[in-house]
Length: 352
Image 1 (spheres, helix red, strand yellow):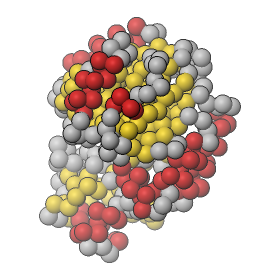
Image 2: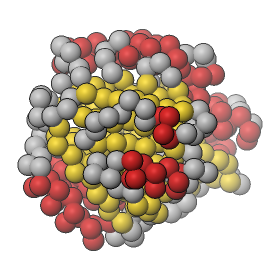
Image 3: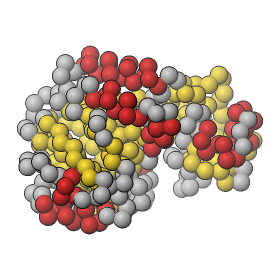
C-alpha cells in the first residue's frame, strides 16, 4: 500500500491534490468555512473514489496544515468501502446493517483490515454500536472526532453521524496502536456523581464539588484549570485500562469534559510523563512488529498538539514518527481506539 499527503495553506484543494493521479481512498481534512465547497469539489475531481472527510487540521512528517486544506489518500492493491451511520446521538444501531454489509463486500478480516472513522460527536454511543460488529471478527477501529459537528461521505455532508471506511490491505497485515503519555498520580481515586451524560459534566467527586476537589489537590484557579488539564487530566478506569478524560470548561462548581462520564464511574488523577521517551518507545514497538511499514495513519488529540506546540516539540515529534515511513494524520477533538473514546492520546494504524 502507498500513501499520499497534499495540503494548501490557502485552502486551494486543486493545489493540494496535485500529483494525486491514482487513489483507492481519500480523506479530506478541511476548514469550517470551505468544508462544503471542498466536499463538492473533491467529488467532482474523483467521482469514483470512496472518500470521507471532516473539519480539522492535518499533517505529515514534514508539514502541518492548520487552516487550509489537507488530503490523505491510500492506493496500490487495497480494497475500500465507505459508508455512514446516521442518528449518532439517538440510534446509530438502526443503520448497523450497512457496516455488516460492507464487511461482507470486501471479506474484511482481522489480519489485514482496519475500520477508520470520522465522527461528528456522541462518540461513546457510536463506538459501542460499531464495535458490537467489529469485535467478534477481530477487526480493529481507530479514528477521531472532527469540528463543527459535520462529516462527509462520498460527496455528501452529514450532521449527527459517523463516517467510516473499511480498508483492506491486500499486501500484508495491519495493526493499531494507542499512545498514553500519562500515569496515575499518587493514590487519588474518585467516584463520579451528579453527572450529566449529554453535556459531559462531572458535578461531584467522592461527594464533593468536582471543581473544588481538583483545585484543592493542584492549587489552581478556575482559569488555570483549563490549561492544567494538559498536565493533569482525569483517567476513567475500565478493567485494567485507564482512558484519559480532558477538562473542557468550568461551570459553577462542576467540570465540563470532552468525553462522557457517568454516575459511579471510577476516576483517577493523572500526571504527565516524559513524552519524548514515550515517543521513542512507540517507535520501537512499531519497528518490532513491522520491518518496513508502507504507511502510518494517526489521530493526535488537539490537547496533545497544544502541549507539544507549547513545548516546541510538535515538529520534532512528527519528524521522529516519520523515520518509520510515510506518516500522516489529523488533529482530533477526541481519539477512537476500538470501542473507547479517549482524550489527549494518539491512536494510529500501521500498514505492512
